[in-house]
Amino acid sequence: MEKCNVAIVGYGGMASCWHVPHLLAMPDRFDLCGIYDIADERRKIARANGIFAYDTFEELLSDKKIELAIIATPNDVHKPIAKALMENGINVICEKPVTLSSSDLEEMIASANANHVLFTVHQNRRWDEDYLIVKKLYDENTLGKIFNIESRVHGSRGIPGDWRNTKAAGGGMVLDWGIHLYDQLLMMTGDDRVVSVYSDLSYVTNEEVDDGFKTILHFESGLTAHIEVGTSNFIELPRWYVMGENGSAVINDWAINGKIVKVTDWEKLEAVPVATAAGLTKTMAPRTDETIAEEPLPRVPSNINEYYINVVNAIRGKEDIIVKHDELRRSMKLMEAVFESAAQNQVVHTSI
Ligand SMILES: NC(=O)c1ccc[n+]([C@@H]2O[C@H](COP(=O)([O-])OP(=O)(O)OC[C@H]3O[C@@H](n4cnc5c(N)ncnc54)[C@H](O)[C@@H]3O)[C@@H](O)[C@H]2O)c1
Image (cartoon, rainbow, N blue to C red; front, side, top):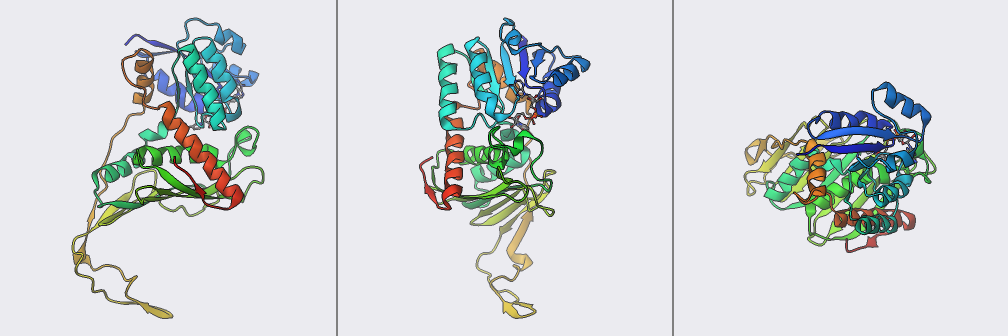
């Protein structure tokens, strides 16, 4: 593959700690030509790290050798930066969330079409192994028909940083983590439509934007999903908890500790009742060992470098782009339904 000349707009955490090292790790495929950051200090740091820094955004825009630019700025400026790049014939990877509303997204897609450039979004968590394992269980019916999926991320440090705390910059956890988790769920369930959305946002550490949320989705097929983000959780709940008609699966943490437990004998229902301090239950008693079997989680190796390589191959007409406009449209619509539901404290009926 002929090398792709890349520039990055916004040299903060995501650019310097993720995109740069990944591009530099593929020297036969990518040339990192330079970065532009609005902050002098960040441009100085880039130069100190041996990376060329454009003095102005206009200088980057007029650099004819740039084939692809990655936007890694706060969320509210993704749209104007993307449009300026595309109007100058530069293909764009935009960080998630692509922007703040569906109408903004439509403007960005229209600009890509008008300027005949590729425009896509860094939905990198489609390559997370925990997600790929649950997708495999779902696709292969390992647990029998899956009827409920719980996807959670829990932290205990509130919202990080400055702009993520402000509404104007597109802060808050729905836009930050929600958009990853909604995208994963929509990719997993494919054509199954989301028919209703209920969401509740939390404001434990922050008044202006949500610092967490719970979302319940109902799908046309009857599947339900519970998606949750918390930033005041000193004990984390499992990353994934999946329920099928013949078994359950849990992925506890980022290190992919977890298990599958499947029923081996549905007929044997007898149980030793559990006596608690104040009562007795047979319904909630653990299953006896001979009626269940534990299995390890399957492993699904993944390589995020494929993301960048796919973008270049798609620009050059050799592959279809993986992260597509219609998929971005769906996750933005879902994000909007989440905010609407939370504002009204009501279920929002959808066809997403
Ligand atoms: N895909 C992921 O896994 C992932 C992870 C973290 C962040 N992100 C996304 O990456 C983006 C950046 O996040 P971050 O954590 O790097 O933020 P950050 O605050 O660390 O960095 C943002 C940088 O953009 C610069 N900037 C602001 N406005 C600019 C402008 N108009 N032109 C040029 N530079 C400008 C800032 O000076 C700063 O250096 C956000 O959209 C965020 O949601 C994605």
